[in-house]
Each structure stands twice: as structure tokens, then as C-alpha cells.
Amino acid sequence: MINNMKNLIININYIIKNKSKTKTLLKTTDWFCLQCKNMITSDFNRFLYDGKSEFNFTNPGGAKFNIILFNNASGCFEIGKPTFEFAWFENYKWQFSVCSRCGFHLGWNYSGSNNFYGLIRTSLIKGETLFN
Image (cartoon, rainbow, N blue to C red; front, side):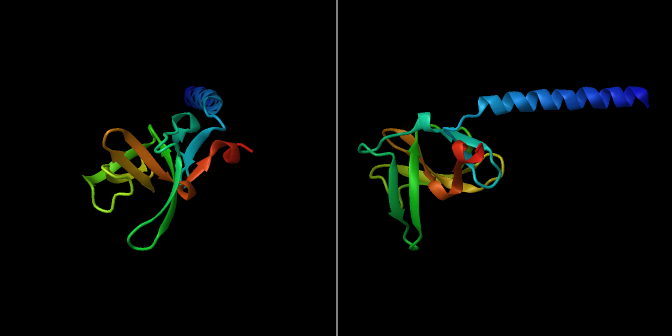
């Protein structure tokens, strides 16, 4: 019983120490999944297309999207086959990008002469909002 209690205390201390380390690594300039708060990318990864990193588009179904472009989004993974169909960026294929933790649709990955992500602003929450 005493050994089990000691192990429990050691495990709790380990979790607390690692949790505080993780918090110090996160920044107000980071972007997180709105659903699960997984770290997705950072403002330092902003990508410029025609001199801009934010765009407004409407898909063929009439849904409107405000997207932010990033050259890296390590908290995403891609699903589906890349396609040119209904592409918003000329000569770029796209495929869906979802949160690597919870699978929430975050936007699209674009591949062409450059690779980048177009992430939906309303599917993300910025660190400065989370931490204040």
C-alpha cells in the first residue's frame, strides 16, 4: 500500500513537472485547434501568396471561408487524394487538413510550386486568446 502511494506521488509529480514545461513552450503567437486545443502552427509560419497571408473564399456549395496561409502546420495531417477540382489557388492541388489529435477539419493543404496550408480562421484559436 505504501509503495503504491509512493508510485502515485512520483507519477503525479512527473505529470505536473512536464505539464508546466509544456506550458512554457507554448506562445501567444501559436494557433490551436478550436475543438481540442492541439497546437497546430505559429504566426512565424505564415506564408505569403501574392503578398497576402489571409484570403476570403466561397466554395461551390456557397460556404464562405476566411483562411490564413502557413508554410507549416505540424498539428495537421492530410486526408483524401490531392485534386485540382475547385482549387482556389491556380496550379495548386488541395486536400483536406484535419487536426492530428481530434480529426477536426481545419482547412486544406496545397501542393504545387510551393506547399502550404490554408487554415480556416474560425476553426483555430490563437494562443493570446487561450492564455488571457
